[in-house]
Length: 288
Image (cartoon, rainbow, N blue to C red; front, side, top):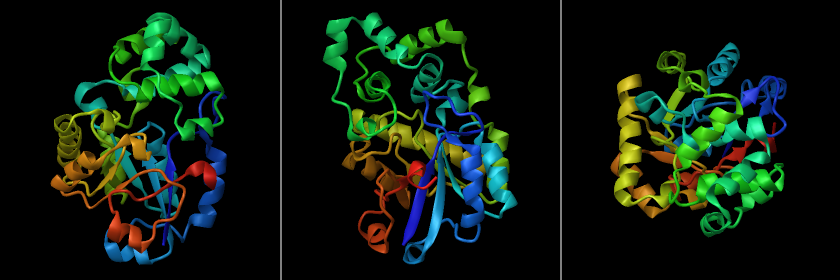
């Protein structure tokens, strides 16, 4: 049985509007985890008891985190989206994070005003359960839900780019993400590199062909970068509504061995046998 934790932002000075994990809390747990962490590579590994640490989004601070892990001989899996490197752009989900960090709940009001009441209501979805239970206030929940889950019937990138420019200026993609060289160093130091799709989009909103492109482009990029084809995939947003059977079929076509989602439960050997493309992970907040 494996207990897997998912991490994103780990910083020394968390912003009150974003769900960062404080670095001090993270490092305080590493001594406890030191001899209990591993990476599963084969089916037989899931019959053992250990912790599996995973880090999503290729965030710039992950290089520093990988060095902290190396100091304690802890190895982890880092899931990388390929679009920032191939197009020199920040993924939409991270543009939303930048805005929330800068503007808080005002981001919701700006989007609503820009699109108009009628258009806004027609695009909105009900707030997913994981947002309802988050520690964000209601307007931030609505904003993130709207950006992440609404159909692309409005130019999300154009609107968010304008708001980012007005709220403090543009952010360079290579200041936000790991560099290719840093990813190579992490890989050479024993960290596993997995795919997080191409553009970190909601795959379940895409056609089969577009899903295939998202997975194929990312796979080829990581193979060229690290010298091997990744065997693990991490669904953008991670919840069951973020992928579908076509997504899983695309992963099988690309010969991925397993994929991780978000579900607060341990991974059992039966999970790897019966649903290797829906392996559960805990949000790090459950432990850290």
